[in-house]
Image (cartoon, rainbow, N blue to C red):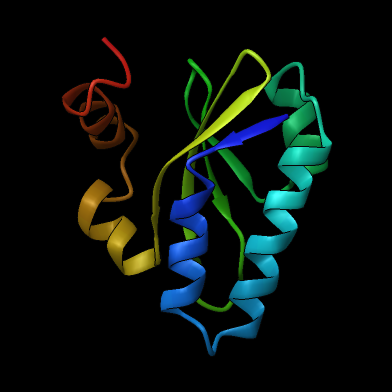
Length: 114
């Protein structure tokens, strides 16, 4: 699977350079995405138990570390995965209020969905 906007993950990894658990989590996620060709959300969540579907069009948050609960929102479409948001749990709570309706509104306001 092709990973678009990988730069966001790399930038987040550099920003948190001393966090080895986060760095490994990002590397593992990139490897998992690039080495898989998930056909549906069930295949994805069987492989990545940290994936949480937040919109039925194919948007997922990944809780890649248990330590700081880094969240990554990724859209899957046509054998491509696009990183559209990266942040820690505090950023997630501020932006999305831990609420799927707020996530949906954010996706709409950023032209990811209609």
